[in-house]
Amino acid sequence: MSKQRKQKRRRQIQARYGSVSSVPFEKDSFHQEDVLVPSVPFKKDSLPQEDAQSRGVELLSNSMVNLPEVLHGSNSPQDEPNCVGYAITKLPCIVPHLETLAVSSTCERVNTPIVSDKFLHLKHLNIYLGGDDDGAISRTYDYLSLASFLDSSPVLESFILSVDQFDMKHDSIFGDDTSHMRQIPGYKHDRLKTVQINGFCSAKSMVELTCYILENAASLESLTLDTIFCGVTFGNYVRCCALKTGKCVSKGRNMVLEAHKALNVIKRCILGKVPSAVKLNVGEPCRMCHSVL
Image (cartoon, rainbow, N blue to C red; front, side):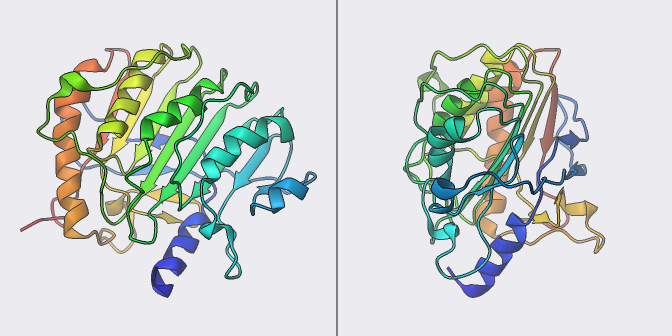
């Protein structure tokens, strides 16, 4: 990974995560709007960190934990794989009363495991997945495995998944038969109200994760699927045309094409499964700045 891309990734991870705030879309309408996620500052009351520090994990308080990429030194945890798996297997015992968790990983290669321990108090979960050395999320990673993280959080109220990659190498469901999508039994969430996926793509396992949420979150009020990941800047997730420059964050042709595939998949595979009580928000590529012509 180039020095410039590493610096950009580091600036992105400096974001402080918060609740979802987005502009609604009608379910039969796909128009670009601004989508902003305001930040919430993390407290800095430290906890015992012997085990966590060995993985570059920063424990910040008993109610909030941030697992960012540490931004200093060549041995920083941005090169440490599988932070999501580490979080789900270790943190329920380290911080049993945790209420807010942010996990950042740019090297997630092993599927999120099913665990017996629970986050009994976790209300807000934010997971950032960045591309590996080749700029893509490892194609071996199964997005549907994140359902185990949701199932281990019985009182979860909000979930944000941000997927930042320069290429999409997962098996795409675009143009494929949807009858073979996997369905797994899961915990029936009666408190999960808001879900946002930034960088939504046509990967079959991501569509399966979205359908899993729709089928198991009876309390869901808002689902946001943004097909363009436009970056995180100093605490705010900024939808492209909200930038002061008036220009969108540049995206490669591959990811712009992928965003259009994702829109097609939303219409074909997800739209019909959204309950009438759920507000569906869809972010599409900018018609001026993300043209494929």
